[in-house]
Image 1: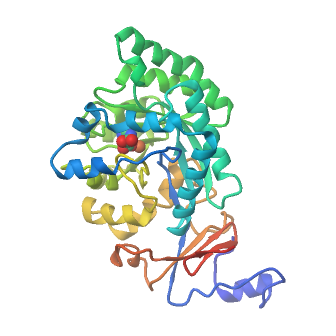
Image 2: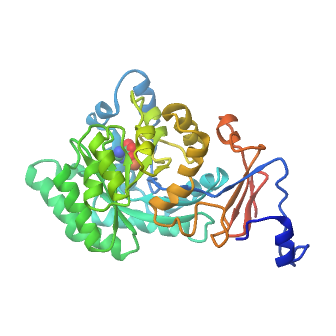
Length: 382
Ligand code: NIG
Ligand code: FE
């Protein structure tokens, strides 16, 4: 991509478009880098809207999960879906992401929880995104929960962790996953189990990212730093020593403030403390049916500013360049710079503030992916 003054552009490329090129007039609008969403759970089937209302009546996420809702209910509906069903769902979610300015994202497995269904989810990520303008990179998350059929005894549960390490993660790596993730949480996978899965993933070439310190201060951030993870995500309960460890090890904090609000948590991740400690902060939607059902990064930006007190500039950096860094692609994506991929978003408004200031509506009017316009005036280019 070229970035610079008109005179320099004209000197290099001439003063009128070549055949097949077009001019996008951004007058009165603001150009931003394509948004990067580094934490989603895209390949799932089935919705859980009744849980939203139950939380409004006072039940917590943990209580709902213990009563048979939560992740395991989505595991049942995702296992029942075909790969083609899941691929179509992935594609429709990518379509909505694109209309809201996302041009590159991560997508996790984690609602299959056995070899066949985790593989089906991974295939659905690839077939659903094939030829789609939004670039997608996949994360293997068989360590999202203990599958319901493995909860009878400690031995059954230990066998599942073994199976993740020996069979499922190597298979998903071989089929094209780039990252390994684990839900490191009290009552889900403890530090030792999480470490085993992250190390097993690393052994087959998967870089680690961690669902860390989301509901309790278990020390997932410290674990992320110890295993050299590229990101630690959620972090509502991150401890001060966890923040220090992340800063020292260069782990990117992927924050999901939409999830805090959606689950009616009484807190957000301490974004300000992390930024002041030198941790790179990124933002993501966490798009999933239980804890954050949105494809819109600008919606998340709203909670990042008003919930976590991040400035508009910090928020934009977090949903572009730092998000790209958390996926290992900051050299090619995440900013409008000469030599990077030409992913550009135009928003309806004369300044960057409009991304959060004009709230509750889609301010993204145009999206360009690798130099090609794919959304114009709010509609997909056919
Ligand atoms: O990132 N924290 C664990 N996993 C998801 C929630 C998934 C679900 O509720 O279905 C999350 O918030
Ligand atoms: Fe998540």
